[in-house]
Length: 273
Image (cartoon, rainbow, N blue to C red; front, side, top):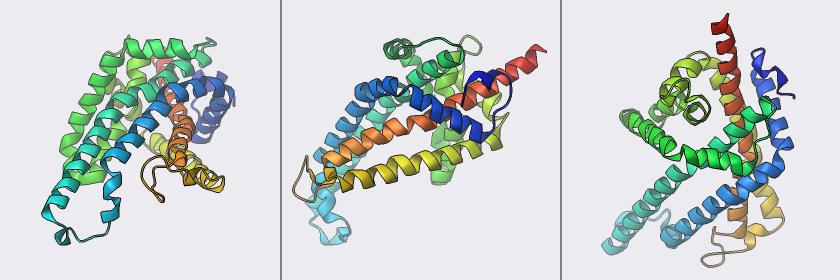
């Protein structure tokens, strides 16, 4: 689907998804650069963390903790906390790099400007500290909701999910990207945004995290062990599957960005009348 109408009228969730798939297919070489420079290193690093800190303890899954030697239980707990702590830190620094370059690409395509990959990456790094600080604010806002467990954490995650795009593309309009994301976009289309997230998330997730692993198993990559002994889950297929999954997940990220831009354009047109 063409992006030409995104400034003129409200697109429904199916039109947004079709436009996202179209953008993904047209810019695949660009996205492959993004995958090789950002997603692949992240997949390798998280795999190494898992293999180093968690792999040895898979043998104890399903074992009654009280039946283990106290020193073993303590070591399992220590390394488990180290693994998840390291994972959170790595993901924190990875997140802005995973999605913000796509925002620059998307608006460039809409406006007829060619935004090269390394230009988008340069623009992202120019706001990287601000992106991290905004992400930290979202994390801190989420702490009270954590008392409500998973459902509670989804509330701020949903309300502020568009902040990287607001900060990257609209900081000249509203410096507070969380406020812009929530007040101008999310409050305007909560039901449409929910439906769009669910539809795009399910379709993209099935392809990325169900179909791709099946293919990798069929061609034998899940049998090539990288760390541990035979039967270890740390295989070449594990790394490739995560990397390809991140690439395909770009469709969902495009869907978020186009939803943000479509709503923002229509609101700006309405305000100008």
